Length: 178
Image 1 (cartoon, one colour):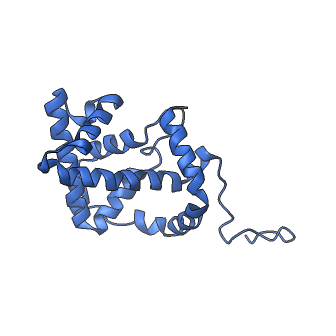
Image 2 (image 1 turned 30 degrees about the vertical axis):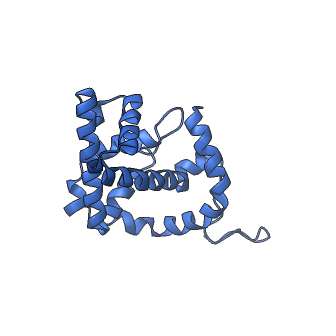
């Protein structure tokens, strides 16, 4: 297990109690989120760049990563509901790709994980005022991606967490409805 996974695992394990309730609520509304029309502004976001960004934050190793957990689809659903966030994300991805092209003469989506991490660190630490909107959005989306990953069934499985029965914990003296 990588050091990043251990860190995120410890972080998530400490917060899993508070996340359980919101994750259950989110799971109830998940079907509504995924049925959202993904045309319009969210469709203007470069999906490959978004996948590379999400994969950089929670990469796949021996366990599934954030891309495999469906986090890019959740982000696109949110962006479809909030066009201003979609515009900020598109601008952030454009900045990330520009910096990657400048530093490595290649698109961000084509870089290996180590170089993608360096590009994100460069932007977050940048003193260039033109990078500040991207820096702020990277920080915001980083926390959203990590939170959504560890609130997903994939993240739960990785942590060994079993969610409660949908209606709460069942009365073990009676058979569950169904």
